[in-house]
Image (spheres, helix red, strand yellow):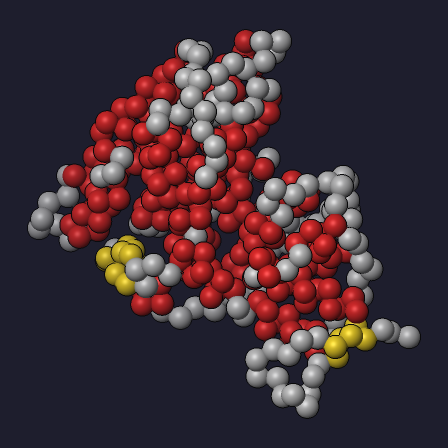
Length: 363
């Protein structure tokens, strides 16, 4: 006999029609709600325990999952995405809050999101050990957002790396963009997240992406194992190079503004993305490759510098003058002095010159 539990009411549910779902289904619903509002739920309790999942879900469960996922847009706005700003949309500058800059656009979810939720609830992720794989599936942008939120939910917890290792997760461009330091293998195509609804999501997450990349740079300064640093640096380089190339092709360079926001405080304090001394027991070639790979964000700044040279060549009479002015403004806080400092850091990484011993706590 199936156990049933009564869930809290959601909006638009008649008080005389409280939905009843199976206990296992309630766990799926709670996980979906935790993705949307992580601070309102006991994250560790959801990720640490394992539950047997049903082969199918009922209509009440389906409706409540849809209700939870429908709240993702407001959740993204709360992640610093609601501030008024200027975006480059259709080769024109559009200003305002996100709902003023973009036409209403629904997030599309497929069975991949349900499989993700079932896997998160059903697998014993507490120990960070081996678990059955979450198989890769074609992903809609809603699925990618759910994956990103799952990685965020597990921040600073052992399950985060287990989640990042899954084949489905490593097919998500948004997961690579936000958590490149956890990824491995070939980076996916980034076009879906610099066009259409994907671009709106990245635009909303700009401030958060800057914080994540800055935190990853500070983390690299603590890595003394060159093999580990090399893996992180290569994944970051793959993600950032593909993403910025996709932004360029889609005429959405503004979406890469987080690169500048992430790098600026570190450049101002002359903080190189590598420990002062890597393990001397490792081969010199490995240490050299690791130091070069660690400069992914610095190379992103150099790409912006090349773009800035192009923007400065746009004349007042040119059609894209307004766009160029917006992008010039994005680069201005970095400017030539910090660009030169980034170039100097890359030169030092290539020459194995010891990096500054200055340390800083992650924000």
